[in-house]
Length: 410
Image (cartoon, rainbow, N blue to C red; front, top):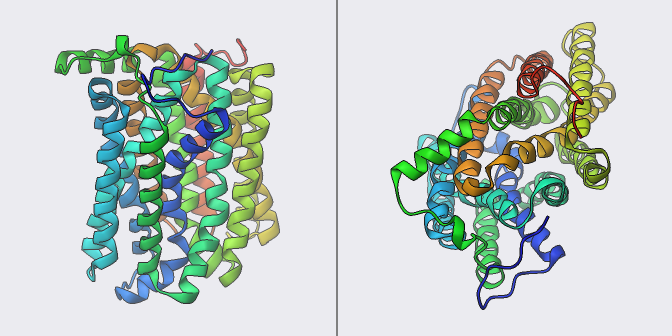
């Protein structure tokens, strides 16, 4: 179900433009991770880092910033509206990007990435809240899947763009690209997206009201259960992203300049799965698709561990890519629907709920991915075990949410 425009005198964008703008709001998060991956070697050399795993902190610090920032933006946007909060977040993102661009100290680079992440939390959490403002139920899941499909085009292009930038410049120019994208988003959103927060849902600034929204979120069994499952599944994805450069580019398979192509191929599979999800979700239902997806993901994780063990942590690259690709395909059938099911009961507190869920899931994912990344030992075994363990725990969380019954409802 969609809701009428609440923009006042400002006309809302059409369907295609709305999906594209939401996708860009979500995509700036992935862009600011994935286009930096090809520069890991150059960053390690520039800052004279002895442990190559340390470079992964440029990813995880950014994720931690996103997780912390999201906690505040949603509740704040329930008070003052979505538009001003997005602009504040983008300003913070730009400040962190410029700081990262100018620093010559790795510690300050990590601080800058945290600041950049704090800002990026704003478009990330508000994208979900804005969709929930205008749509609900299966239509919301469809919009999120279409936005996710466009959003997943970012990992296809971003590493190649990062590699292209490195051909003509240094890792600093990658941050120039990030700053430019943030300016584009701010201009487009400012000109075209009206305020979507319903006047009846605007909350007075009140700690009591905020805590009431948080209480509703964490005490709603479906919301907290699916949020936990989503955080665990995102931990798998972020572990893969953080280790991808070392797995494909340098340490395990040593593909060098072919890394962006392999990374793009896996991301392309996820984009295809998001399109499939958008096509099927209204016909089959969120539960059937996501429950089937997580069961398939668990089975594929078992195969990944078997493959890694059979080849001493170095399975053939084609075999590994096929299994990872299947996993990511199933991931894209799972997490967008988890997100929609977690948000569905929380319409009156959509901003606060989206804020908490975004923060909660991102911090879980960042912490788990950090542990997985630190365990990298020159093989794919730590990553494969991460997939198996986290997916198993996510399935338990789903079972708990559904009172120990899968596929019970559409």
